Amino acid sequence: MEQCRRSSIHPFQRQTPFIAGNRRLREPQIQGYRALQSHFAVEREPALVQIPVGCGKTGLMALLPFGIAEGRVLIVAPNVTIRETVFQAVDSANTNCFWRRAGVAKSSPEGPFAARIDRSAHLSDCIESHFVVTNVQQIGTSRNRWLERFPQNFFDMILIDEGHHNPAAS
Image 1 (cartoon, rainbow, N blue to C red):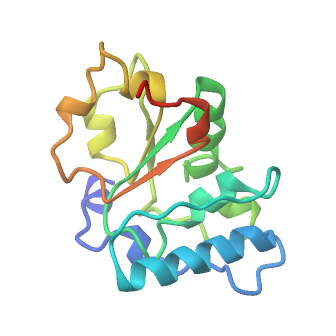
Image 2 (image 1 turned 60 degrees about the vertical axis):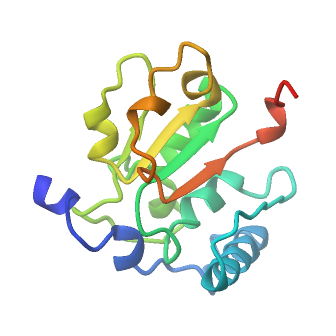
């Protein structure tokens, strides 16, 4: 298992998700994925995606790393409830994860694996995972013990869910 997790070819590049023509996906998910895939094919500048309420933001976040990210993905949710929903969607060990429900990807012993940052999490959990899912309070408070522990290039992609819930103090 450790050998699989440390493979030099990342599962986001190795696996080909079934997106185009997938009737289980919503049109905003397909369009959002295509738009970001096109964007990142030509540049590395950050991008903002906004889709209507109820159109599958969590599913879109689960799709985005495939063919785009070459390393670990950080997903930041606005609260613990949404963090858990997102974690369940991107945890390939969960038989009801998004990729299985939507027929996007087959189960693979090579992941992608997910870790959640909560009170009981350890750095090794994050190191051994392809997705790291947290809530803004865990990672963005003055008592934060996480950001300083991650090397500068620990994450290749950062996805912020519902960013408008936690405005900056400025």
